[in-house]
Length: 313
Figure 1 (cartoon, rainbow, N blue to C red):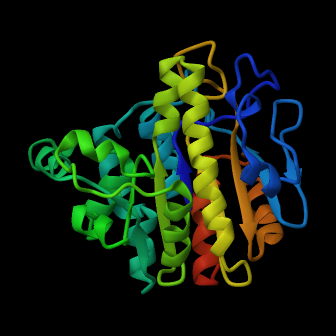
Figure 2: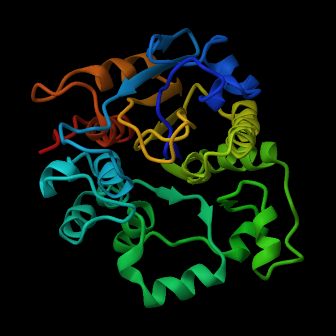
């Protein structure tokens, strides 16, 4: 699973939407030459399926990361539980929900092997020891579930991927000797890890940061970097036994005319094993709700475990 922070489906307008101003050959190949827009929200071909998911979750206001990621990684409507959108970190009363229902814990409970592929520098661990209350949903889920967070040594051994994909940012934070890698190699690492684990997650938050920057140049750079990593994944991924799922938590980068998040639907892309069946399951309304962020974890649990998942409460 590739989690892209802050990516919605926006207008087909290259002056504000960097997806239409960027060179994205891997993504375009995956989607049969198309990219999603507000007038073309669904894409399906023999390779992959793209569906729009509602990120507003039936709550007024702009979607935020804390509640959106709670919905995405637990299957429970975090915004509804607290009565508002909240972020970037999860609201305090959502932490017990995350601890009990996050996908890492649920997979471990049925003896599956989940893996968080992001590697973190020492200063992150120093920060965590003092500010555990300010962790994102993904890192908090791992800490609460006993999933080891990867370190510098894991990155050097090829067991993890840097949040910036290429390791370039580590030079400025005390690791001048860390070798840079091409984004395609980062993708190949993730594909190799998918052969060892039942669920591999990589989080790419630079898309959200680029959206907040209002810099089209920055947005194009981070999208093209992601696309190059995606090409490395596609090169090695065994589609007969593995599903690639790409999802986001709220819109942002697709509209560079504003620094704020958007109410746009977010894309979920499925490629590989059973992608058509999974797309059908994901798009089925639950409790009268259209396809939204809460549908992802139940469908993934059903797919990975082979047993029907409990619906979101």
